[in-house]
Image 1 (cartoon, one colour):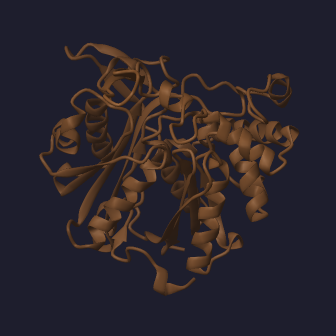
Image 2 (tube, rainbow, N blue to C red; image 1 turned 180 degrees about the horizontal axis):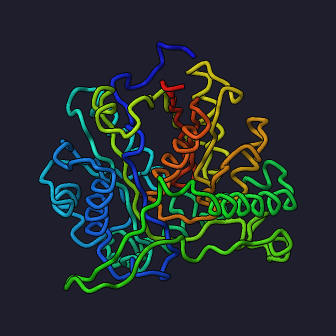
Image 3 (spheres, rainbow, N blue to C red; image 1 turned 45 degrees about the vertical axis):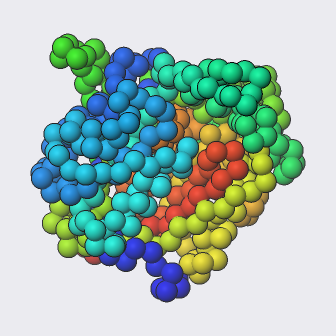
Length: 402
């Protein structure tokens, strides 16, 4: 590794201080009934308690979300109040890259000596997403209504096409075989359900109760509701919606939150239940490809990142990504000449869903937990966003007790 490119050398992620809700599919749980910002703040409070982290340790809060929620104008300070800890904060939003960007912003705060302990909290609720009304004085429609989730995914204003067209375009460009896409998607489902049979998720996922404003119990979020194991034969029987894209080879909208901490090396050792584990930031890269070719952009970001750090895919212990389409993983495997069976060993957004804001935060948490279980090493996390953007980061996990 080129040590000169190491990013945020002062910042660390303390092992075992994180947590995520499950991601129930839209309209399948009580999360459809709540203010997701309030729920996220209260849930972070609950997770910090379970991790035995005094919330008084937090000096700053970076939140990330992409879908407007009631009182979003007040952003991080309001969510901090729901956390019951009055601290300043900042809101980050970059479509599906939000969950990673929020962690990077937190690391920059620590590295720049602005704060020593920064909380990261990302969340979104796709259920009953709001409809905005926009005055358009220069358009033939003087007033335009926009359903935040469905209209944005159905229409990219830069290209005029739907988000699904990105996958179809990339599949045709890279001459992707649908048989491979179906095989990959079925394999991803097997990875997730095999992991569920172990205790891997016990250190990550936190069952959370949902209450209404009167404090009445509405339900418990204790599973990725809506996820059903789809066999290869079922995959192959599904009709194509675009080239190599079916209902089974794309993700689904869901609701949820995820949280972790970023702090200094000394504080990480103090707060973590396993202080011998050191999690460092190595590097980050972003690229933008041609319009509506999003599935190829993560591979381009990874190539840029590997070049800047001097690392190779062979150096990676864990490889995990945000993959809204199975096509993403097939294209990545072609670009990097990498075996896609080595990726996403514990599950991925293709299977467990896509609430945008917290998606990559949960990916990070799962990837770090996997790396610790393997004794440490380099962790590569990457994803896509907004039609043609790719983002990637490398973290390094060192287990000083081994």
